Image 1 (tube, rainbow, N blue to C red):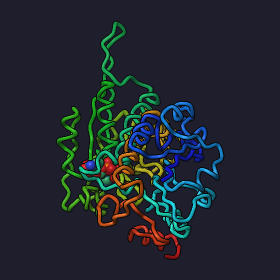
Image 2 (cartoon, rainbow, N blue to C red):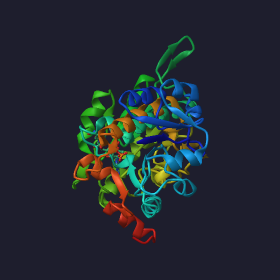
Image 3 (tube, rainbow, N blue to C red):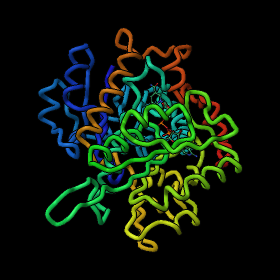
Image 4 (cartoon, protein in one colour):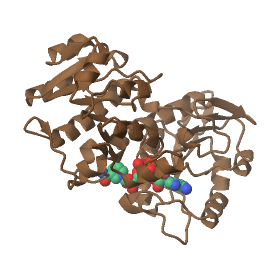
Length: 381
Ligand code: NAD
């Protein structure tokens, strides 16, 4: 079986699906790995390191894609890339299947067996394959560094001959994987941190990182299947906004990370809440690409409004490509090794990990939520 690593072509995508160390492990396990020339360059992993690890470098992109039995990628393929894949071959990548079901449809039409790294179940068994978590941790860390670089203030408390500096007040909204890493990073920089999430179960984790949990009692179930958040009612939204309005107004920095899978990001900072923020404050909105947690966020832009900076970063993990690639590489390698039996893909769809991750096979979209999302955008199923 020929396993190929593609060179990413998306603007700003600096990660690579496999790093040389992981190639060496897979080669040692008896797998044959082909790497597109220059695939790791943007993340500082060069062709000679891949060759030393036992990979074969392929300069011709069409040849690499066309001959691959299993192609590994980070970003979802573009239309013109899908055409390079051979019918009956397999692809493992981030695909954003609920946000961009058309890509899954194209892959299905082309007869590709497509696996979406977003669909790895959030279970203990699949923990080392969980690319959403590994990349979210990077985003949470980097969000705080962006905030610190944007803030016109120190984060830590300082006692100096020139006077005492009070620590910055950081509020983290959404305490999932990214939010918890943001809390830990802000604490390491010396800020006083508060955090909020609609899932009450995170309170202990927040507190164990040295942050204060802002509690809002809601009269509804906020947790859905798989431990994810549900979309909450208008009444619950009003209640959380009421409780959080003062905390947002007092914050120097707000990091927002709240998401509900398959939905537009919840609006956590309304126009009214924003109007009460202090000049010099900054918001880093990690949900910018999903519509933003703040009313004024624009994806890919830094905006200053009433003296408050709103940063709406896109693809933060790609801005730390060395460790992002290392972690993704571990996730994807563990997944394919789990799936490969006797040098072939074991397409046992009754297996929870394989079954839920495979979104297209045999010219069909395999996931009902992806089919529904495709109908919503007007595609045919
Ligand atoms: P996510 O990226 O989908 O969302 C980020 C956070 O936003 C979540 O904590 C969510 O509760 C919160 N949120 C949603 N709506 C909100 C609102 N209106 N107000 C405030 N906060 C809101 O989440 P994630 O980081 O990917 O993690 C989601 C779940 O998956 C968590 O339960 C996490 O513990 C679980 N998880 C489990 C594993 C595992 O068992 N292997 C691994 C990773 C994550």
